[in-house]
Amino acid sequence: MFDAPESARIEIGSGRYLSELEDTDKPSLVEYLNDTQLHENTLRIPFPYRSEDADAFVHGVQEVTRAYGRPLHFAIRDTSGRAIGGIGFDELSVGHCAEIGYWLGRPFWGQGIMSDAVKAACRYAIDQWQLVRISAHVFPKNPASARVLEKNDFHREGRLRRYRQKDGQFLDSDLFARLT
Image 1 (tube, rainbow, N blue to C red):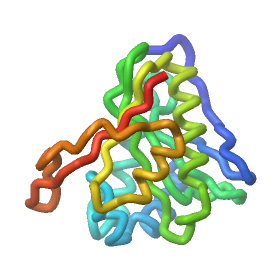
Image 2: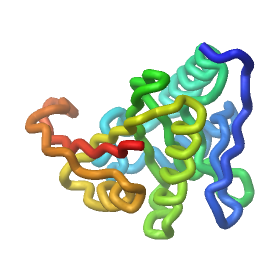
Image 3: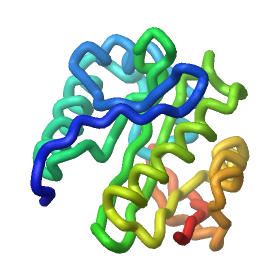
Image 4: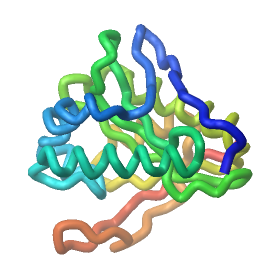
């Protein structure tokens, strides 16, 4: 889809950065994603989160990166380079829109890391793909995620009732969008 492959390292502040997911990130994924609260607040993270889940996720992300010639999904890394979270884009339509999704390991909550990561990832996406709209879905029971988006110029467009299906239940989803 793009002319040449590009490896990305995106600084987010305080020595933390975004970079491509690697096979060596699998133990961190299993450690941090094996959390019931992360499972409850996200759509696609299974619980329990096992090594096979990390293998499938990293493999899928690497395939998408190859297909697009640059990453759409990133590890959020601490100052030592360890993966402590993830952020990425789905439903990419170059020159138009994409949907952002993210997660962060519980020990890192409340430190402003995710707000910084969303800011940097959106800047990257707008620059790389000339996006005019970035959207996000948040479960109403996750106000912290809504605050992260609002700090990054996303506006709540409405509540989609029984929009998502998870664990045998239909759940409402708040739709947020940032227009450029």
